[in-house]
Image 1 (cartoon, helix red, strand yellow):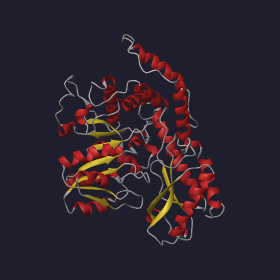
Image 2 (tube, helix red, strand yellow; image 1 turned 135 degrees about the vertical axis):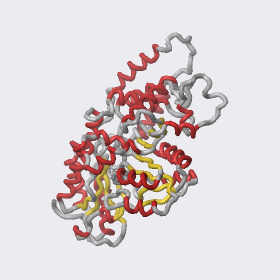
Image 3 (tube, rainbow, N blue to C red; image 1 turned 180 degrees about the horizontal axis):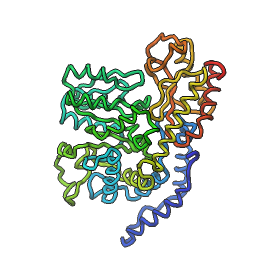
Length: 457
């Protein structure tokens, strides 16, 4: 979506008329009179305030994980807001609860699960909280995750009163299986988090090796696939063999988190937690004096730590998956593949010249690279200068502080005078990015030249 899309507005109005037909028999309840002039003034002020944003919807925004929701998701979400359902109990969200169950069933199907427990959450943080909470009761012990795992795991372990220890990464930003094995030999490990798409680098942890260690040591495996969960839909040749191997084994983990509000074209917040064993539901058992008396069907609040939950999120996700089913070879999968192609193309372009030092080959659609310089310290300063220069030229990137070991600085004559480097990072998650790589690379090269980083390509 290169511009602010408006074509869905007439369709939304038509759908609202269709929705109103279902309640036409109700007597007129009146309502507060609308003050069109006042509304117009307030909304105009809102529109003006919202201009103080980066153009997250445009391909020249290639910094953080911000992807515009699909127009059908926006329209379905807005349509549901005329009802404002609450997917805690069926009383508050009859239709939207059914739609949530159907959408979550299809998400579980990505991993080959048909008999499972799962529901939507406010996002990956809440979803990971539920997964770790369940894990702490089913497999008590220390929680382990890689040094490049999302910081939410150490933070949530603290919230839950669990011991947490980071495990070293290899030079590709993945959990080091040998370091993990060494820590497991000391015992007391309850859960290992496998990151399927690190948010800093896109790295995918070596899941087959982790599962082999589980067979020997008996810990629980939780897959944090909040960012990368959908990439298993790509064709085999679109992913590196070891990355493909991790996705092929995802169905063997104990729990999975996936965030539809990242690659699933949804508004914030829409996360999902899934458990392979549906009997985990017993951990959620509680008594409510009023909530669950109207139906013998499963109320989603019975299997969720959250109470009030937005039914509009479920409606938007259901509508998007109805339009773009998450299946191999489908339109949704092709969108993911376009972002992956864009990342590989940008990586190769950066590696061709003498302005940049790219890190490892991207596994998904995130690219990280350092600025060419005499030392890591100088490279870090140049990265900040390039970041500012690119923004002045309309290209918005991100900065990241990562281990210097991720970059082959020795081969590029960069002295390792510090252990971490401030580098540049792009998340090429919009399908339009595939057609904008040359434009992005050209701005990057001009920005590097202006910042004094390297010579001609």
